[in-house]
Amino acid sequence: MSILGISVNHGTTAYMDLMLRTLLDVDGADGVEVLVLDNDADDLELLGWAVERGVTIRPSGYGQTRSVTTHGEILREAILARPEPEAYLLLDADCFFLEPGTVATMQRELAADDRLFAVQARQTDEDGRDLEGVFTPWTREIEERARDLPDGQWWDPDRFDVTAGDRVHPFCTLVRNSAATQRAVELIGLSPGLTQCERGGRWWDTLGLFTQVMRTHGLDWAYSTRRAGHFGNVSWSTEWSQIKAERRDRLRARLNGG
Image 1 (cartoon, one colour):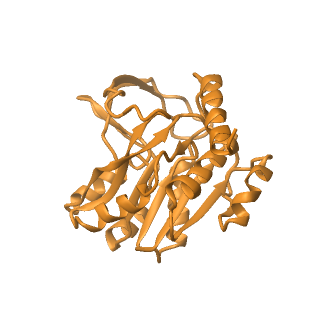
Image 2: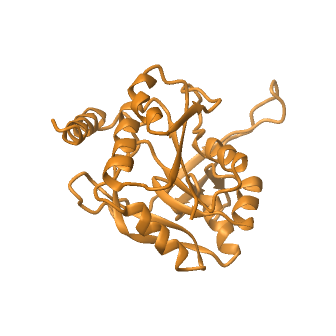
Image 3: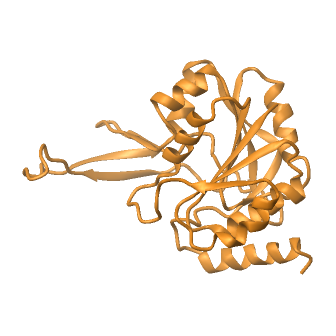
């Protein structure tokens, strides 16, 4: 199975360094082509070793100061530009591999079940503790205002509840390439989406709407039997950022024999 690995660097170069080192040196990732799409980082010299190992790094066309997430847009453009691989390995910059053969196992699991469009690794911390199930579903109240014209009057705000919808998570996920995949990526995209109604809407995070569209084709996703680590939210949330950075650097030192 030919696989294109895609990851977005959004001010996360040190995490990307750890992810790529563990992908190549811990997991092995034999035969996986890796593409890093960079949002104007000023410290890419940290990844010079990866370029020497065959990793491609190119500008994403987006910067780090956007007011909305561009992750899904970048992934969409990359997939549509490269329709030939049999599968796409979507990797968050802040994931990392704990054991050899994770990607190979995910590949076998995806190939073995035609009902699946994707296989997602199980999220753990650096000590292998399971993170799945830690984040419970939530419901929040949204207030929304709109106007017809750029200089028009704002309407009175509408309020409605939204509940988080389930999805395959792109932190470490192998997505089968197919006609359905290409069409859904083209028409629906991979960005978050929001539905609203008085009885309650849904908030679909990155790959969320894509997941629901693939289900209309009778296709679903499954957890892999293998695990991968994930720090989570390092590109946009400052909560626990110092602690996460310290954990990241300990892992980097361990990998480098420190």
